[in-house]
Amino acid sequence: MTKTFSSQQSGVGALWPGLLVTGAAVVVSLVVSGLVPAVSALTAAVVLGIVAGNVPGFPVATRPGIAWATKKLLRVGVVLLGLQLSVSQVLGLGAGTVVAVLLIVGLTFLGTLLLGRLMGVPRGLSVLVATGFSICGASAVAAMESVVEREDEDVATSVAMVTVFGTITMLALPAVAVGMGLSADEIGRIAGGSVHEVAQVVAAASPAGGAAVAVAVVVKLSRVVLLAPMVTAVSLVERRRRGAAGGERPPVMPLFVLGFLVAVAVRSVDVLPVEVLDGAKQLTTVLLAGALFALGFGVRIKALLRNGPKAFALAACSTLLVTALGFATMLTLA
Image 1 (tube, rainbow, N blue to C red):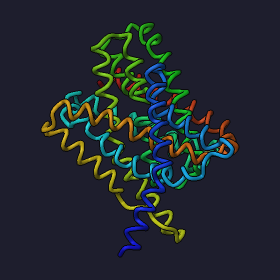
Image 2 (image 1 turned 90 degrees about the vertical axis):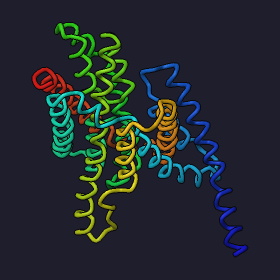
Image 3 (image 1 turned 45 degrees about the vertical axis):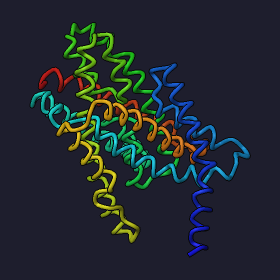
Image 4 (image 1 turned 120 degrees about the vertical axis):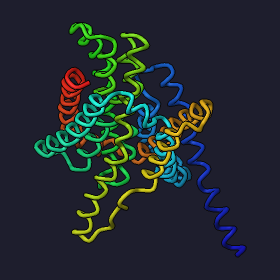
């Protein structure tokens, strides 16, 4: 019993160097995001992770803690993400907008997978790009990576594509919308339906005013709630594929996805004070930034560059697809 307790202490102690490095990276990521709002803390974190992981002679003692952060922080962060959206907010958008969101997410996901196959992009990378572009950027990529077979560099590549093309869309959409003479409400719905990251959605809708931002955020979060069924669906497909190949199969619904749905339910019954919800939102960003730093740490730049051109082409096509669907569905159905 003494040996067991001692080994547990030793195991916990081995995590601290990596956790301290991860914590420092999160702080830097938050500072960068504050200084450059177009760059989310999650994006900054994965870039820092890639840089740190490729520094020669980076302390080996940090690896256990960083590896621990990869899974644990991610899962808790995704669960807390569910507290940002209630069912009443989604229903308040109206049936037309809800249908539009379902079409945007479903067609973007399936269309990106098809394009990836035609372009010869590895399946795991295609799934991650499709998830990030159709739902909620880096957070969705981080959630999906736990159930799909992929290479370490596929996560970083997908997050990088989300950043590049989300920023392009963020900058271009306001000019296009104004040129078309769209109302603030229409701009907000299109921004929420087509831009990748939540922070980018806010920036894209801001020129049209506060009303546009409010609509954009709710539409965007209604895409986020589809993360749970999307991850579950992919997990079921992976179970069949790996079962046929004799490999280890993922669970039908990962526990953290179930936790996400429970969090949405808790938010929907409106029992938590605003202060708790605000704190949970900040904590979500911190946890997901830590997880993405840890994911980036395992990436090797040479491997990352291997799929760069194909990933870039797929991301460009996926962006055009989600943007076209955003305009078409929100202007005709919403």
